[in-house]
Image (tube, rainbow, N blue to C red; front, side):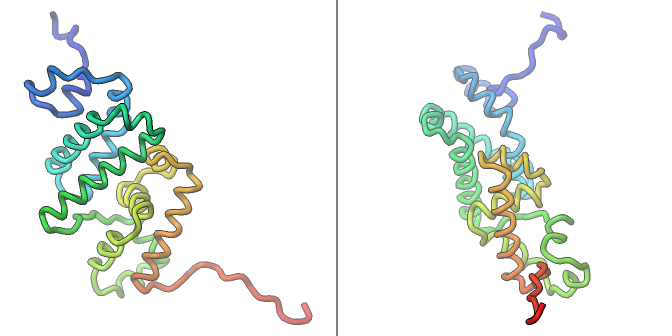
Length: 202
């Protein structure tokens, strides 16, 4: 077989990162391989923003996909494949962090800061960004996930909705609730426009 005739690596070889002895006997369902190809990017990015290194992310997500594969039939039967898979990812990441006794290694960029405060001066008055990391980590699960995917990883709302198996309006709802919780937690002023009250006689 010539080099040109070589086939592209499948999820068995490329995606799951299995050793030669492990991936050869696996007969992965086509729908599972499709799921892997569609979600592995987001899963790895989600893990990497928590662990701070690609190597740690790959190790954990490797285990995640093995668990998803082991329960693939049941997951399909549940009718909530994306939600079930994300629950496994979230649990695996949380368990790894807890076992190592450390907090997430969040990489905060511009958008999250802009979403939390209207001006640069307000951010500069904050004593430390550590409070921001802690506040994000304490968000309820759904709010935490959309904040991480949308603002830390930079995925558009439509992509976040697709990853999580919810509609864009629901993503927007969780984003608003999450940002409001962060604003209150960090003691930032409320810049939302308040309705003007009509004066008597108007």
